[in-house]
Each structure stands twice: as C-alpha cells, then as structure tokens.
Amino acid sequence: MLVYLSLGANLGDREATIERAIAMIEEKAGTLLRRSAFFYSEPWGFRSDNGFCNLCIAIDTALTPLELLHTTQAIERALGRKEKSHDGQYHDRTIDIDLIEYYDADGKPLVVQSEELTLPHPLMHEREFVMHPLEEIKPER
Image (cartoon, rainbow, N blue to C red; front, side, top):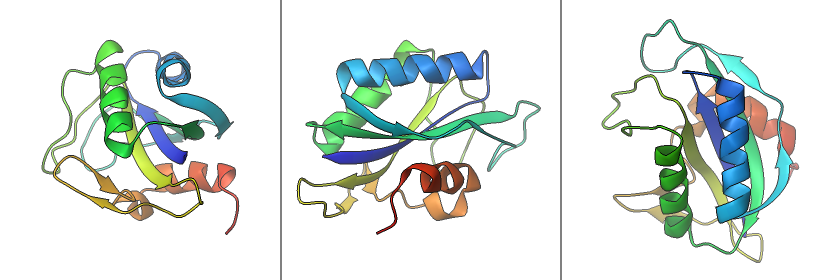
C-alpha cells in the first residue's frame, strides 16, 4: 500500500533525527519511494523559539494503518519523543511522524475514523509544512 507520511522536529539536530526516523521507517515499515526536500517553518498551534524542520515521504508498506501508526509511534519513542500532543495542546518535540494519506492496493484512498487514527489526516490542508512537501512528492491525480 502507498502511504504518505509527514515528519517534523524542532529540538536537537532536527535534520539528523528526521534522517534516522526515515531509516527506521525503511527498516520496520516499508520501502521508501519518494521524499521531499526539507521545509522549515515556525511552530504551528503553539509558541516556541525553536523552528521546525519538516518533510514528507511516500512509502510502500504491507502494514495496516493501525500497525503503521503503532510502528511510527515506537520510532518516535526510540528517538526521544516523550509524549504525543493531545486535544490541540502542541509542544516542542524531537520527532513527530504523522500518517497523512493511505491508499489500498487498488490506489483507492482509505478513510479511517477511530479514537486512535483519522485518515486522511484531518488538519493536513491547514498546514503549509505538510502540503508544500506533499505537493513535491505526490503525483497529480
């Protein structure tokens, strides 16, 4: 299945952490198909002196959406992420990995609505740091 992910960091060596996250995604989740350039932005939804580095990747995976979510959350924890944002309470982070869009084997976008996961990502269109890198790697449909 084709999946688009957004990765971001605003603490530590942001680029190196994102590169390590991509390597871990390749190791545990699937094959890297495409990646965008780094995109730098101010924090979204909270105040911080630490700017973000973001990018989007496309992977081919055999994991279900929830399996992929749990895998990316384990990668975040391995790279120093202590807590996830909840109820719109955002904060600085060493790494953030979001599932943006997930397509089945026939190329049909999956829609998921659960307590753990919503696909496509409900806020992606409000976030230039997602949409700009995503446009770089996503073919026009």
